[in-house]
Structure formats: C-alpha cells, structure tokens
Image 1 (spheres, rainbow, N blue to C red):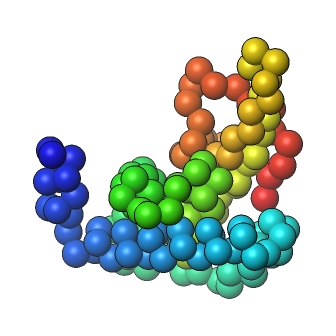
Image 2 (image 1 turned 90 degrees about the horizontal axis):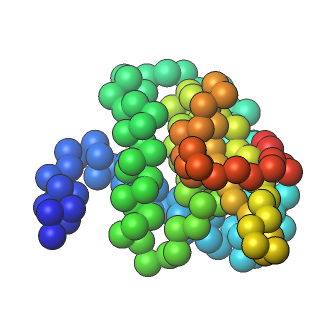
Length: 142
C-alpha cells in the first residue's frame, strides 16, 4: 500500500513520463509480435538518428529517475514488462532526451539451462537490468 501511495504522489511531469512509458510498452509489445526483431530495432535506430537537443525536460530527469519510472510503469502495466521490453522503453525515452544508450543481450548457463537477458548501458555503466552478482556473456548490442 505504501508503494501505491508513493505512485499517487508523483508530479505531473512524472505522470507524463509514465504515460509515455506505458505507450512505449504497448508499442514494443505489438512490435515484438508483428515485426522481426531486427525491424523493430531499425525503427528504434531511425528514431535515434533524429538529432535530439538537450532541453529543460532533459535537465529535469536524471537517468536513474527515468529508469525508476520505467520500472514503475512496467510494474503497473497490463503487459508483462520483460527485461528486453524495459530496456527498449528506457532506451527510447533516454534517446529522445539526448542521452545515448547501448542495448545488450546476453546469455548465461546455470545448472545446464541456458538463460537470456537484456540490459541497458550508458557510458559503460549498467543503468537497467543487470545486477552485480549476475554474469551474462554479451551476444548482441545496438
């Protein structure tokens, strides 16, 4: 209940970001179902190529704050917010605000089972999706 109260107390600009994130979760969900993954990435790259100027909105949100808001949006979404969907959504939100990111997808073998995971990096730092104790061998980055 305390978490829900915290969400209700968000500022209007936080709610705006949550709305964008919910829309992007829906877009990514549909895109992953109807497009090949490479085509969805082409849409992302095309959006990334547009020159983004840092704005007052960029200054208002830190990278950790945007990551937290994407996590909240994923938690309260009717769409299952997998690591890949969260990384794509946060990447889009950050790129639109002039921040560059690197999406990585890796694999790991635990007890004979192969696991895959997606995470997001900025300037060599992991900003979403990978905990210190986890190790995944990167296979793909964009």
